[in-house]
Length: 266
Image 1 (cartoon, rainbow, N blue to C red):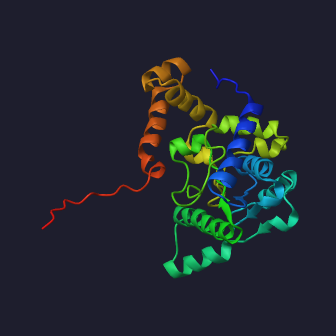
Image 2: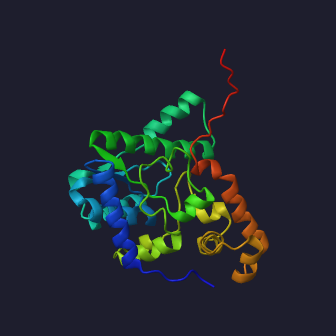
Image 3: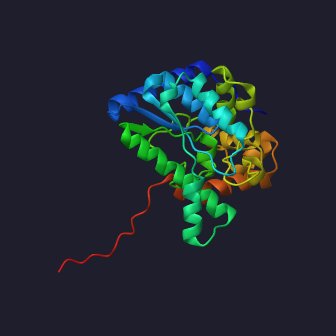
């Protein structure tokens, strides 16, 4: 059984309305800054942010590294254009020189270390630009990534607001098509591009279609793992793996715990 269908237009309208209220009324900011990679999540967020805040109040930052394919950069600029963001509000910042400086200072890094650092460098750049323009950093994480912890703590997880954080990846792809984004972006294999050849589903070992269905039965319906396996017809070992991803990534979704000391006033 696949995920149930949702009213995509209702989802769009509610996200646009909620984002507009949060940025302008609650946070009292002038707009939003979005890091656009050329992938489906950031593409959808860029369009929604433009609709919510007005294209003139959105800044799109494209931040390639050595592992970013040229096609992703081209897609990122196409997304900005489709979102109606003025050219003067679209900026290309190559983070490779920054990563190179860290590499030399730290005596070299593994692919994973460099990839996690790249995510945090990008977030630092976005917050600097947000401060400059009196804006919020509009995040691009979806519900699937959040629930299984597939994001970098204080990297792509270090944002101010998450417009699509309530939508599974499957729904984000459907919303992308609903918004009129090209299929090559809407259906592009997900990848943070943290190292050459990096693809999300290869690293996870499970497709998002399966992950989303398991998460739906677990968190929306409230079934136990054993029940999910039976209802969805998915191997129990896969369900358990997804449950474990969620459990181990709890620290990513919560504020740092404060270890309460034993205090005796004298």
